[in-house]
Length: 122
Image 1 (cartoon, helix red, strand yellow):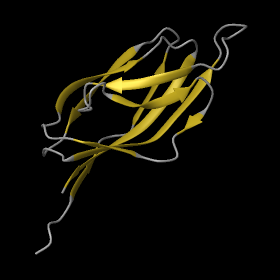
Image 2 (tube, one colour):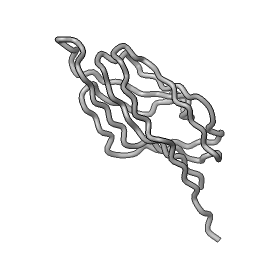
Image 3 (cartoon, helix red, strand yellow):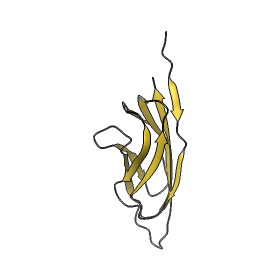
Image 4 (cartoon, helix red, strand yellow):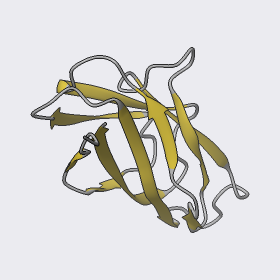
């Protein structure tokens, strides 16, 4: 008999982050222990809040949700970025609580950031 996959998708994260933001938190409660976490549809769109914004900056997004050496999820720029391919992470612990997401630098502009987290159990 073939094992069935349970899938739980958290609500889409969509937040307006102010210039100067370097981290944010998300409450996540998955009803089972996922074996994989898929991050997809990462989109950023920035809006200049100063007359002369900095050049196009790259930001690395990390989180304590991800079980890896550095927790890196991926990168995005201060101009519109769309992640075309999902990223999968192995997982072996329950996902329930508040998780911190960190940027490697403060945002230089008001930024709308969205992404989807899908929790899979095989």
